Length: 128
Image (tube, rainbow, N blue to C red):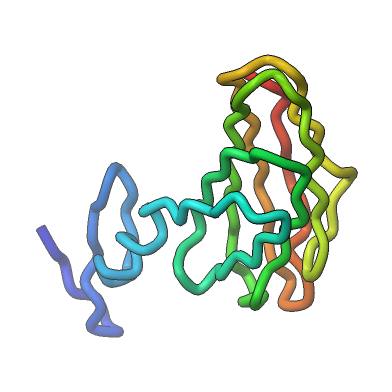
């Protein structure tokens, strides 16, 4: 169901969220962008806010752009029994690199918010 308000954008309920964003924007926001396994990952936040990663080596993660006000979520799932270190490079401000540990199948989540210059770390879970 859509309800139109003064600015002529419909109010939309999508996956439990109520917003005035077009459905296309919401779909991009919640469809995960799967990052590769190269040592350097250049993620593109214009493709969405949700990124997933299964590291197979030590990695550096960079952002290709920093849209002001955008939230970015990174879900890291461990594999194997080797600990890898994820370093955040270009356009990231974080508390520290992330070490994945040696237990396979653990999940870490990180949340960032952009100030237009950097994605600033807001929250990070321990291995779940």
